[in-house]
Structure formats: structure tokens, C-alpha cells
Image 1 (spheres, rainbow, N blue to C red):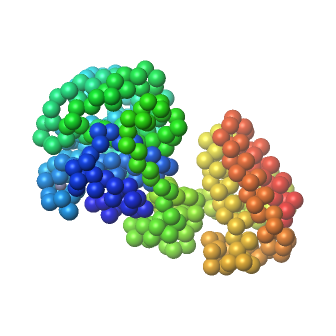
Image 2 (image 1 turned 90 degrees about the vertical axis):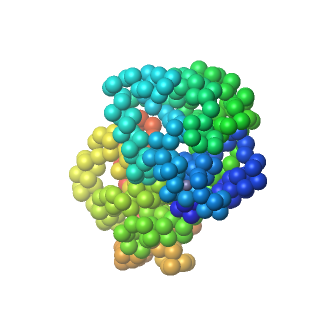
Image 3 (image 1 turned 45 degrees about the vertical axis):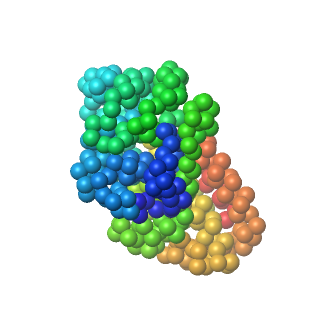
Length: 367
Ligand SMILES: [Zn+2]
């Protein structure tokens, strides 16, 4: 089963050895960027510890224990993640009916399409009632497994009150317990929490591996696989999301924008920019900026390394851009930096139209 997780061989080998040599820590911190397999590794690690198969085959994915883990229904698995206020009882009953259906939808999504993002309708945190439930459960002995497994996802989103309560549990967890925290922001966690965990780093996934995985698991062609891997920038979940949705409607818009830039067609641009009024368009514009960055790289590769070009179907247009500014090779990093800055601005509460206009004006000076 571990072979399903790409690019984390080192982390997996460490965990495998710990099980083999019976040297399990009580608590682990899996840290690294988003979408690289931290949660799945945590789940499989818990499965491996409790699996009924022989050591080399663990986790098998087929035995009753593994099946329950995969279904999040194993009585010795507890999964805690940031949510709106649940009013969850120590027995795990969600009392806030308003949130219950969202809570269940989150779990379904996590089971079936974990690469998809899920947004709760309210602010999310790990709260004291979840930690109380954990404290209660941790005192009981395992039901049917060898060890109880607690996964706390995005542990950096634990609030102060819950963190203080959790610290006490982390000080002396019972021997039949494994606690796994995952986070993409380890520096936000209390140092006292970090110091009590064995730290396991997770790395961004290489483009080659993402491309290979997309070609293997989805219906995308090689061109799209390359493009999505580039946009995803080491985040496998994001690459899968792009490939599954294939909703790069922004690419068409993007190609239109390029035409306007190269033709200095201000009038067309004015009606173009008019479509991006709302804060919701942030995501589309953000994607467009990513595509622009790739585009700038492609213009440079046109001369230096044509193999690396992503927009292989647009070589004519790339050539037009190059001919307008053959010095682009020297200016590319400056331009990319500018685009990075625009991305950051986009995160603030700035009208996304203003950002598009700033980008258009700047690019018009170059091409
Ligand atoms: Zn199994």
C-alpha cells in the first residue's frame, strides 16, 4: 500500500524500520508542504501497526483491520482535524446539527477524493472539546487493535486552550498509543509540543514524479501533465485536482490575454478585465499569474532549452513574444519576481482588477 505514496520513500523507510525493530515513538510530527502525502502516510502507518498480515506485506489493505482503517471506522483510530465548533461529546457525538452534515461530508471527501479541497462554511480550529474526547479515549485500552492511533491533522490550527490541554496528554501518553500530528507550518506549533514528538520531514514531490503519476492515474495527455505538474509546484494533490477537473478555463482566458498584450489591444483588455470584478475571481487570476510565469520561462527556453517548453502547442505565439524582446533572458527573473509580488498582493484585500491592470501595463512595457 505504501507504494501508492509517491516521493516519500525516506519517511516511509523510517517508519517501517521503527515497526520492524519495535522502536515506535509515542508521538510523531509529520511536517512538510501541502499535498505531499502526510495524512495518507499517517493513516497507512496506523494500519501497518495494526494489520494482520506478515510484516513485509503490511499494511495489506485487505484484512478486517486495514479495511476499517480505510473506512475511518476502526474503533482504535481517532482522527481529529480543524472544524467549525462541533460541540463534540467525549464519546465522539457531534451535537451541533448545523455542522454535522458538513463534518460528515468532510470525512466522505477525505475517504474517497482526498486530493479535493473541502471548505467549511465557518472558521476552523482544533478545539478543546476534540482534545477532551481524545483524553477520554486515550485512557481506555485498545478495542481490537494492538495500538490506538490518533491522527491530528493540521495541528498548527489548534487553539491556545486546546494546545495547553493537549500538552498534558503528550507528556505521558499510554504505551499502547501512537499520536501523529501533521502540519505544513511546524514553526507555528508550541515548541513544547514539537520537542515531545519524533519529527519526520516530508518533501515536495518532483515534477517528474508528478507527471508520471498523472499519466498513470488520470486521463490527461502529456502536455497537460507537464503543465499541471509545473503549476502544482511539488503539490501532488493540487496536480491531481487540476487533472481531475481539467477546468483550466483560465488557460483560454490566459491565451486571450497574451494576444491582447502582444497586440497592445487596450480596448479588448478593458472589456476583458471587466469580467474579474469579484473577490471570487482571485483564484482564476492567481492561476493566470502562474501560467504567465510559465510562459515567461517558455520564452527563455525557446532559445536555450526547447525541450523544457510547457506550452508546446503555442510555439508561434512564443516566438512573437521573443521577437518583440530578445533580451527577455536577462529580464526574466525580474519579471517573475514582479509576478510573485502580484500573487502576494492578490492575497490581500486588493481589488483583483487592479492587479490585472498592473500586470497588463507592466507586460506591455516588455513586449
Ligand atoms: Zn491489513
